[in-house]
Image (cartoon, rainbow, N blue to C red; front, side, top):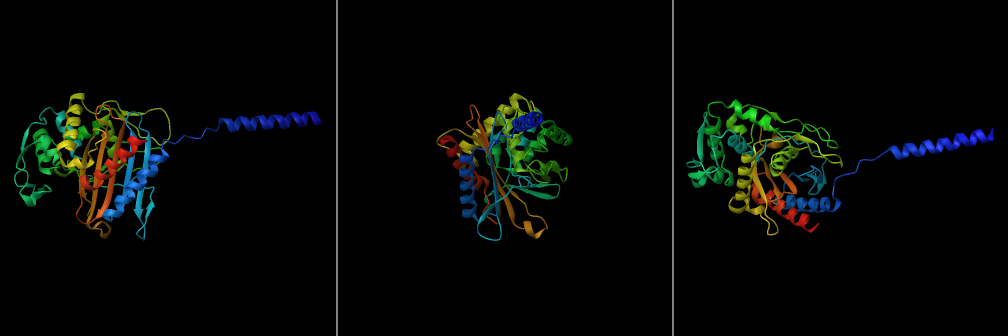
Amino acid sequence: MRQSIFIIVVLSIFTSCQCRQQVILPISTIDSILQVNATSTLEEKLSEINAQSGQVIVMEVQTGQIKALVGLTKKDSTNYQPCENFSIWQSTGLMHPISLLAALETGKVKLSDKVDTGNGIYQVQGRELKDHNWHRGGYGEITAQEGLAASSNIAIYKTMEKAFGDNPQTFFDLLANMSYGKPDSINGIASLQPYKITEKNITWNCIGYEQLISPIQVLTFYNAIANNGKMIQPQLYKDSVVVINPQIASRASIDSLKKALVFNITDGLGQHAKSDKVLVAGMQGTSSLSTNEDSTKGMYAVEFCGYFPTDNPKYSIIVSINKTGLPASGGLMAGDVFRKIIVNLKQN
C-alpha cells in the first residue's frame, strides 16, 4: 500500500514537472534600454511643446519585431503618464509618399515631372486645397520629387490627378492591393482598429484626410518600403516572421520612392531628422484633427516616419504627437525625436 502511494506521488510530481516544462512563456521583442531612452526622449519633447499625447514605435525592418513601444498622455496634470492605447484612429499627415507610390505604379508619372502649385491655393470641387506656405505665395512650378520634399498638398494632388484623373477608383484599388491600413490586429495590442475611409474622395484621401488609421499601421507600410516592398506583420513577441504582402508595389516604383524619401532628408523639410551618424530616409507630416467636437478643436497631429540606414535598412521608426494650437510641424517636432532615437539606437 505504502509502495503504491509512493509511486502515485512520484508520478504526480513527474507529471506536474512535465506540465511546467510545457508552459512556454512568450518572449518580448522589446529592448528595455531603448524603451527607456525612447520614453525619455518623447516625454522631453511633449513637455517642450506642451503636447497632449505622443507615440514612438521602433521596429526591425526584416523581422517586424517591435523594439520600443511608447505611449504617453497628459492626465489632469502637467505630468505625462504611460498610455497603452496604440489603436488611436485618426487622419495622418504621412500619406503623401503612399499616394505618390500609387501614382508611380500607374506608369503615368515620374519624380522628375513638373507640377505647377501656383500661389499655394488651388480650388478643387468648390473647396480650397492649400500648401502650408500659401501665405508666402506658394512654391510655383516644382518637380513631383520637390513637391514631396516640400510637403506640398497641391503637388501631390496634381500628380494624382495626372495618374488617376480618368478613374479615381483605381487609386483606392491600388491602396487595397498594396495592403495599406494593414494589419487589422497585432498580438499584444488591444483593439487595433481596421483602417477606414470615412469618405471616398481622392482629393482629400491622397493627403491623409477622410480616413482613419493608427500610427502602427502607417509604420507597417513605411517598413515595407524600407524592406523593398515586402510587408511584414509587426510583432511584440518573438516568433516566426509573418508576411502580410510579399510585394506591395513594383521594385522600380519602390526604388523611386526610396530615392525621394532620402531627398526629403537631404534637401527637404525632413532635414530636422537628419543624423550625422547615418543616412536616413523618411517623411514628415502635419494634419488637423479638428472636428465639431470640443475635444479636438484646434488639435494637430505632427508626425515623422522613416528608416535607416538607407543602403540596408535595419530599423523603421514612427513618431506621432498630438498637440493643440500652432505652431505645429511634423519635421521640426516629431523629426527631432526621430533623430535623437537614432542616436540611441546607434549607441545600443
